[in-house]
Image (cartoon, rainbow, N blue to C red):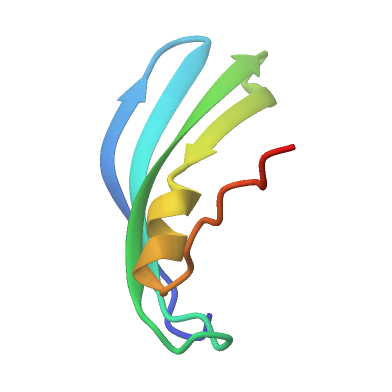
Length: 76
Protein backbone atom coordinates (compact mmCIF):
# COMPACT_ATOMS: atom_id res chain seq x y z
CA UNK A 1 0.00 0.00 0.00
CA UNK A 2 1.80 3.11 -1.14
CA UNK A 3 -0.37 5.41 1.00
CA UNK A 4 -0.45 3.40 4.24
CA UNK A 5 -1.05 5.50 7.36
CA UNK A 6 -0.87 4.19 10.94
CA UNK A 7 -2.24 6.42 13.68
CA UNK A 8 -1.79 5.68 17.37
CA UNK A 9 -5.17 6.29 19.04
CA UNK A 10 -4.32 5.32 22.60
CA UNK A 11 -1.20 4.17 24.45
CA UNK A 12 -0.84 2.67 27.92
CA UNK A 13 2.55 1.89 29.45
CA UNK A 14 3.49 -0.11 32.53
CA UNK A 15 6.69 -1.55 33.94
CA UNK A 16 6.27 -4.95 32.27
CA UNK A 17 3.56 -4.33 29.63
CA UNK A 18 2.43 -1.75 27.12
CA UNK A 19 -0.63 -1.54 24.87
CA UNK A 20 -1.14 0.53 21.75
CA UNK A 21 -4.48 0.93 19.98
CA UNK A 22 -4.17 2.12 16.39
CA UNK A 23 -5.97 2.75 13.14
CA UNK A 24 -4.61 1.61 9.82
CA UNK A 25 -5.62 3.33 6.58
CA UNK A 26 -4.53 2.63 3.07
CA UNK A 27 -5.39 1.70 -0.48
CA UNK A 28 -4.20 -1.75 -1.58
CA UNK A 29 -3.05 -1.86 -5.18
CA UNK A 30 -5.09 -5.04 -5.76
CA UNK A 31 -8.46 -3.33 -5.14
CA UNK A 32 -7.74 0.39 -5.43
CA UNK A 33 -10.27 0.93 -2.62
CA UNK A 34 -9.35 2.83 0.52
CA UNK A 35 -10.09 1.32 3.94
CA UNK A 36 -9.66 2.16 7.61
CA UNK A 37 -9.65 -0.42 10.42
CA UNK A 38 -8.59 -0.63 14.07
CA UNK A 39 -6.17 -2.86 15.90
CA UNK A 40 -4.37 -3.27 19.20
CA UNK A 41 -0.94 -4.58 20.18
CA UNK A 42 0.11 -5.64 23.69
CA UNK A 43 3.82 -5.90 24.41
CA UNK A 44 5.50 -7.67 27.33
CA UNK A 45 8.95 -6.60 28.53
CA UNK A 46 11.73 -8.25 30.53
CA UNK A 47 14.83 -6.24 31.38
CA UNK A 48 13.67 -3.44 29.07
CA UNK A 49 13.38 -5.70 26.01
CA UNK A 50 10.25 -6.83 24.20
CA UNK A 51 9.94 -10.58 24.69
CA UNK A 52 6.36 -11.07 23.51
CA UNK A 53 3.69 -9.27 21.57
CA UNK A 54 0.07 -10.09 20.84
CA UNK A 55 -1.94 -8.23 18.26
CA UNK A 56 -5.50 -8.08 16.97
CA UNK A 57 -6.55 -6.31 13.76
CA UNK A 58 -10.05 -5.92 12.34
CA UNK A 59 -9.21 -7.52 9.03
CA UNK A 60 -12.86 -8.38 8.30
CA UNK A 61 -13.81 -4.70 8.34
CA UNK A 62 -10.91 -3.77 6.06
CA UNK A 63 -11.83 -6.50 3.55
CA UNK A 64 -15.53 -5.52 3.51
CA UNK A 65 -14.60 -1.89 2.81
CA UNK A 66 -12.62 -3.09 -0.20
CA UNK A 67 -15.61 -4.97 -1.60
CA UNK A 68 -14.82 -8.51 -0.50
CA UNK A 69 -17.70 -10.68 0.67
CA UNK A 70 -17.96 -13.76 2.86
CA UNK A 71 -19.44 -16.84 1.25
CA UNK A 72 -20.89 -19.29 3.75
CA UNK A 73 -19.68 -22.87 3.48
CA UNK A 74 -21.86 -25.32 1.57
CA UNK A 75 -23.95 -27.62 3.71
CA UNK A 76 -22.98 -31.27 3.68
